[in-house]
Image 1: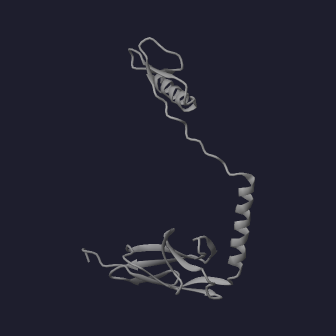
Image 2: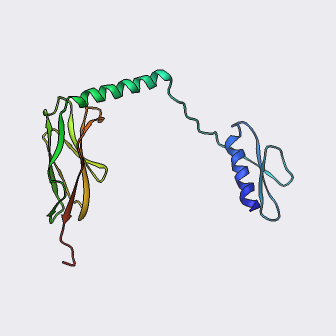
Image 3: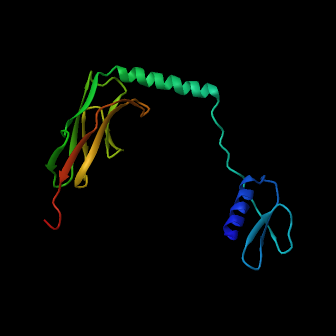
Length: 174
């Protein structure tokens, strides 16, 4: 119990030490490690790497983010609907090679600079302006597909209802 506490204390000292401060490490006869900012008999000086710091954005930059969100909402409001037409929700079908073609529709049609994006199990798998996206070699089983409209920067401006579908594929056993 004593050794983990000593080690944790030492690591805490390392994390909070200044880049220019000297840190010493000592291991006693029982194997307990001690860290200190003062030299110890039998101790060795160790080099401490600088602590990583993160600079937070200024309030003006946060306001820019709010403006970006407003712009995304405005662009998304231009679309009345967005949906996956094919495959249908809860559909089960055979696909020997695992290829699935997703058909996407929106009302009105896509604006200039926008694309449809299909996600499979939460991961983006394809984009298109035509409304047809083929995804190859999907594993057998039940999956969830989502559809989004993204702008030229890849930011989602509109999302449709996700669907669930099941692919049946032959196996070596069948």
